[in-house]
Image (cartoon, rainbow, N blue to C red; front, side, top):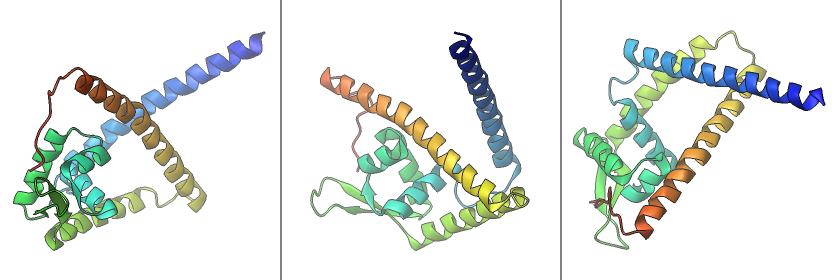
Length: 177
């Protein structure tokens, strides 16, 4: 009978270690952001937006917001900022002239690539002593961890948004143009 209790205690201990290391990771990433010159061309939010457009191609605000796990109003503000910098352009959607489609510009690709190079160089320096197997394991576990976050929080956000919509609450609804 003590085996299930021991397993439960061990799982609690391991989850506690993961929780603590997650907090340390967030602090360390924030420290790197504050002390480094990673985001000279574009800030972190803009960088992620540019990376998403690079990975998935042009899309409207709603699709981009969904891909980033943000609400459309936040995404719209981020798009406006990177558009002012010349990193993205808006064009009218061919299927619905009321919608605009956001696409990377050459300037946006250049800014994104510069940030990506610095991030990759820093990561390579930091993990230089790690074996290929350890690097692969870290990449796999990071991907699973990030997917679990998306599944838990993005899925519940979508359900929460659907519940608001079902009750006629249009809070946060914005135009994507």
